[in-house]
Length: 228
Image (cartoon, rainbow, N blue to C red; front, side):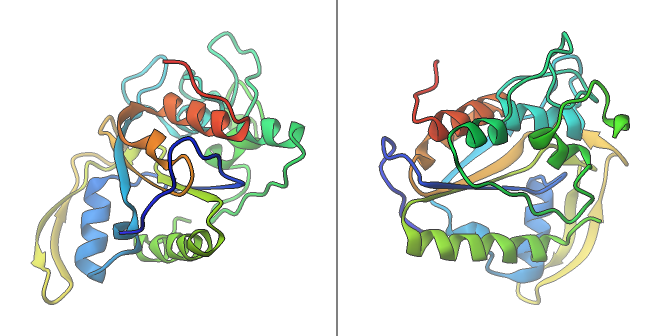
């Protein structure tokens, strides 16, 4: 595992990886198929609850809004409050601070998850999944940069869990999956994993709500401590 900087040290850069629908079952399958994963290099880990303001089972728009703004909202809303008022996003805070910012997606940029960081809409309808192994490779590249840079925070999490995936059979030695099963074709209320490395990373350990994750990211950007 990589060591992490002290908690009161603020990052110069923040890289947030969001694995859409990624739950513990998906990571388990990825590890069996790959063996060693870049996700194992993180020293800070936690679990994140994902319910929205009006539903136990969230969807991408509301879940991404919590990560982008630090506030829970209703399902299908993109970075607006339950009263349909715009919520300031991590990107908007960064722009005010004169920071460079960007987004890289494997879907369209108007998909609900990236859109929550850049837009505001009452309903996501106003507006390709990547394999687990490819996602892990991208995380590894980010970690390599952060390890050399020493001033970069890496956070990896998911917007929600999809499928209620479980691994029923396979071989660790042969890196082979023989049997997996799903409880649903949609999203679930299962907590999702979180991994963090770099300055401020210990703020993300333990079990917390996804809005709390968004608040922590904004707090680190603005160099402020979040309220309990």
